[in-house]
Image (cartoon, rainbow over all chains, first blue to last red; front, side):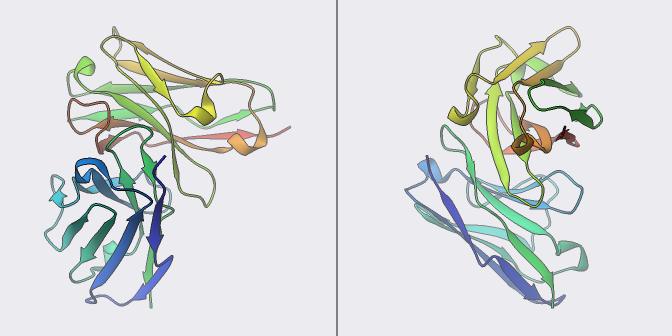
Length: 108
Length: 121
């Protein structure tokens, strides 16, 4: 099973700041099959990025994904108030799919 | 529009079973695999398993083997997840989620709203 480790655990930023979130896999992720989700309290996760760098339908272009192999990054170019949430990565290259423990982006 | 609608919260006693429905609409039911993911309070997301709504085949996380069943009803476009021998550690929000394309393992583009299952004596 591929273990995903996200860092940092918490990111304290202000609106307008740039956010850089990391996801490191215990082994290479097949076909760069890495997704990012946003989750707000009491809500289901929302798909932001799939296949490491492809934005899901309706996702603003301030969200971007990059990386390959074992190291992946989600970047939010300029934080909007609605972007403060928990972000989780997921590898979907094979069984079992696994998730990282999440990074919380909070108001500074 | 694509929708996955789950049932309301459940409270169960240790040792009991829970069966959570996920009613889908807005797309061809048999064309997309449905996964189940759970989230314990304050914790991360945990994959439980997947069902192929077309033929009914399944694959489960090793942790849940022998305790989880996933079925589907093509007449109502509904999938079900049943977890047995419940214990307090199974207290969590259970989500169904649809894959983004016609592959077993893909990102999840649509999610149910979640069903809170509380296991308590």
